[in-house]
Amino acid sequence: MRRPVPLILLTLLVIFQLQLWFGRGSIPDVWRLRQQYQTQLALNTQAELKLERMRAELRDLRDGMEMVEERARSEIGMVKPNEIFVQIAK
Image 1 (cartoon, rainbow, N blue to C red):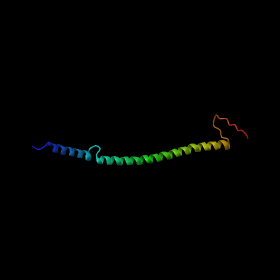
Image 2 (tube, one colour; image 1 turned 90 degrees about the vertical axis):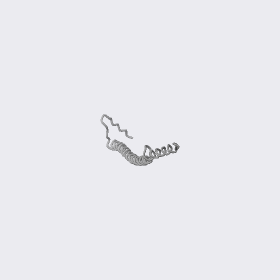
Image 3 (cartoon, one colour; image 1 turned 120 degrees about the vertical axis):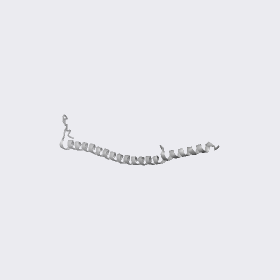
Image 4 (tube, helix red, strand yellow; image 1 turned 180 degrees about the vertical axis):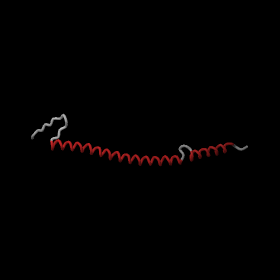
């Protein structure tokens, strides 16, 4: 009678190899996930750059409008509705 141990070990080896190559967490699966990760990193970088450009544009618009309003107030005496303009001579 043959010993069953080598047959069991061989069966386990085949099962583990199948898991390594075709199962969840297999080598091709890890390669695919790595590629998805790199793609997502590139997309995130592009999104961060776009967001920073939009933030800079928003700052420019906000600061720009404040500068325009300040200049209009000082040069032509612009006042807002329900606001009283008092000029003090130096």
